[in-house]
Image (cartoon, rainbow, N blue to C red; front, side):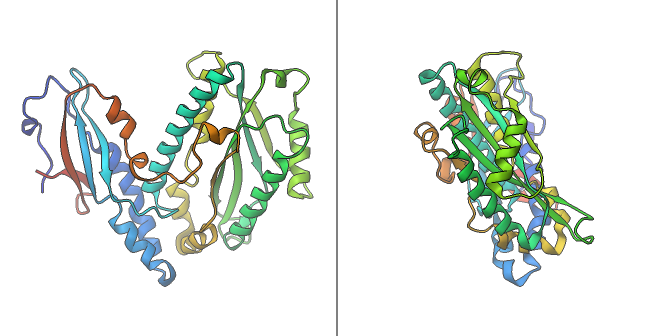
Length: 322
């Protein structure tokens, strides 16, 4: 096994080949410290073992566009699907992002004047051992919120995220759970249906049964391309809404408490799609081809090579198997 040199690529049509596997190698590197944390605890040792084999061998389509840098597109591989696995969470994010983009494109054909809103709902930090119950309470509160008379739409996507804060709760790491939601609202929302940020805060406070004013953010989705078209703005919000549930660097901060977080969030769905939006966007857990670059491979018109990339733990990177 060795790194594939440029000369082995059978005279590619002027493709620029730097390190096409670097994107995949970076994600795999995030997995190693998390896998070690899981393996050191008897209750999650099996999870750590699964993580150690995750994405160790990948089927790659090395795309060779003329005059451009070669791209390594993921065709297949074995993924552990552990909730805290950084590689799997990255691939789930890509799958959800693709779903949202496809689904919202279809939605805007039927509802061309609807626009996206990006809503963030928070509660106070909790200990790692309280994370599961806190998230369940928040998701129940979200359920109640969406059924309140003021709620402006039946088309929404919800993602529950958590970050780790050090030095809180008597110096032990604490968890900051929060909800990011993409709401697709009718044009009338900006007139008689408008809900102020203060009202959103009040409604969330009541739904969650909080005795303090929580931090709530509501903003109109805008397109990074400068377009004000409703579809472009909603697609930009979709990309933001499908970010990682938890970043691997945050999991590392937990140290020996990482296995406890695994147990706390086991069985909890961190992504949800409303009934109406589910006609456009599937709400099942991404599996199979969705975790790979199937859409990009299908759309590719550039010549390419079908190769296998294996993880070299000693070199800490993927290498093509020749």
